[in-house]
Each structure stands twice: as structure tokens, then as C-alpha cells.
Length: 445
Ligand SMILES: [Zn+2]
Image (cartoon, rainbow, N blue to C red; front, side, top):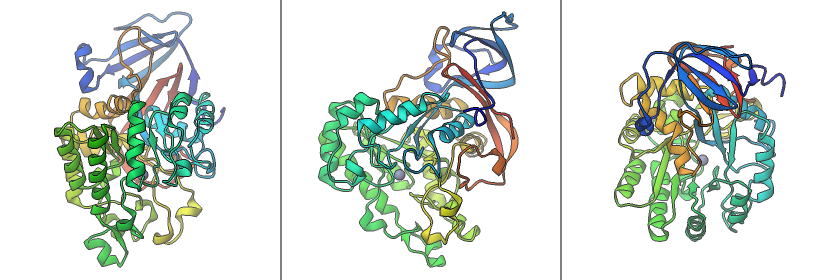
């Protein structure tokens, strides 16, 4: 772990100087914090003291954070770690490193590995591999055997092994009866089914969003309705079974409206959105001359959809933020657009996209954005939410909202480089985390 983690220090006792405390919106009742920078003492991995000019004791290391914010640790509930099976794209080590440097102290990883994370063995393998690294890894188990959409997995067994949800992500649970039974079982276990919402009979062989741009470029498109029909079906199945559907990586206006309406009717549906879907549109495919780093599923959609994502984040129709971090090697992405695999990495740039697209234009407050990275994902997955309360386990993210930086290949901590943001100017950066008793510094490389 040496070189990859050279800025990681195992440090149960740390005196962190010069930080501004900020709580996510729903933790506001836990007390007001001073807006001026303070010191924060971590003793035996727990938050022991918060105050001005705290005295350094013999057993502590000292870190000056230069006025950065500190919040409870962020969680990305939708990433692809690729191990086991696709270690040429990412490993648990490189993926957690990318998460740590993006400001995340926890991630949930999708089961489209090889073998698929469809059994307790694979869930336990991922958890044990992740133990050494300073990021909590929560595996998501497959809904069906080999993610083939036919035979249900041993859900209860996977829950025992540490799975936090079920999903066939990468592919939808396409068969409605399989989805119905999966919702019935998972609701008995108190866990959500996270569905990649795609009606394959409508979407294939789509290479981008179906609309004016795909027509102009002569590319076959994936229409919005391929996503919306599956969301509508899953809402009806959730209503019928009483199960909890979590709509993965939502991207269309009508999709958000369906979730909003369902919530108003008391149906157990939640959803998440990725930064690229509230930032970029299908015009990027034209502007960037078929750059495969703007190819993902769901595809980049229209400006109207981008606005609907922001409205959904504002009024709570969209619960959580996530990246859908999906590493692919250079060889896999450096092919013609129609042959390239779907997906982009996103852990490095998630925070700066939130600053530039949500915070700076005044769409969402800092506290509301943090809620969607800290509280919502963990509530959806029934994971304890970290706090800044004295005596609680220190699980912290340090970040700023004003630092300007250039996102170059040298800043990429993932094993793969398939980002739509390479060589672009960014604003706002995660500067470190404290997690699992270790401090990880994120100097700008
Ligand atoms: Zn997906």
C-alpha cells in the first residue's frame, strides 16, 4: 500500500488546526458551530475536543488545514471498483484511493464484477480486500445470479455477509416478475433494490441520447422514454409490494417527475443523480467530435433535463448525489464512439462540479449539497451517519469551495483516466479525509 497511499498517516491522535465546521442541513439541530476557524482534537479515533488554540499534547500529530471546511465524511453510494475480475480498469486499492482523494470516506460498489458480486463469498472477499484502506467499502449484491436477470440470488445470505442493497447495475432487472419477487424479498430484509432503469427493447443499440444531436450526427440514440418506462414500472411494483426502489443515476425530466409524484403518494422510491447529468448535455458529443469520454449510460441528455435535475435536487425529488464512477482502460475507450464501453470516472471531480453547478449559481446551499453526500446515501442504505458530535467516531471530510485548480492526468488517482473533465479548470477541492483512524492528505499534484 506504500506508494499509492504515501500521504496517508495512521493517526489515532491528531490535533487538527484551523478548520471551519459545517454540518449537512438535516444535522443542523445538533448545534450551531462557530463560523470562524477552530481546532479539532481526535483522540483514539474519536472527536474529543473542539475549541480555539487547543494545546498540543505529546501523543498527537498536528495538521494545519488553513481554514478549510470540515464536515462529516462523504459517501458515494454508486461506484464501480471492478475487482474481482477487471483489475486492468480499477482495483479495490486504486478505487478507494480515488475515493479518498475525492473526499469520500465511504463508497458502495456495484456488483458487475467477474464473478458478479452475487454470493456471500464475493461480498466477503470485497470487504476483506477493502479492510486495509482508509475508506469504508459497502458492497451491493446482485439481484440475480450472474446479473443475468433470471434466477434470484441468496439475498439474506449476502446481507449476512455485509451487502447493503441489491442491484444488477450495468444492466436493468428487466423481467417484471423477477423485479416483483426481488422487491418482495428485499423488503423483508429491509433493503432497497437499486435499479439501472433501462428498457432494453427501446434503448438498444443507442449510443447517445436520442434527439436533435443524435439525428444530426447520424448516431442511433437511446430515447428518454427507455428510462422513464422502467422508472414507472418500478414505482408501480414498489407500490404493489411495499418494497423500496432506488432509481439509479436518474437523467430525464419526466423520470424526476415520476419520482416526485410517487413520493407524494407515499411510495418508497428514492433516487440519485451524477454530476455529469446536471452539468453536461448531448451537445458534448458533437462539440468534442465523438470523444468517448462523454459516452455513458444513461447518456448525457438535453439542457431541459439538466435543469430538471437541478430542480429535483432543490425540492428533494432527488435524494442523493453519486458519481457512477466507472473506470475503463485507455485501450477500451480509444475506439470508435459506437464501440466504446459506457461510463466515466467521477470521484476526483465530483466536488468541484457541485461547487460550480449547484453552489456558485445559488441553486443549493452548501448544507443541502452536503446532505446529499453525507446523510441521504447512508439513510437509503441503512448505514450509520457520521456527525461532528463530541465523542463520536471521527469520520471527516476536509474541503474548500474556492480553490481553483487544473484537473490534469497527474491529479487522477483512479487506475483509469476516462474523465470528461481532463485538462479543465475546476473550482473547489477536497483537501483530505480522516477515516478509519487514518488521515489522508490530498495535496495538489
Ligand atoms: Zn447503471
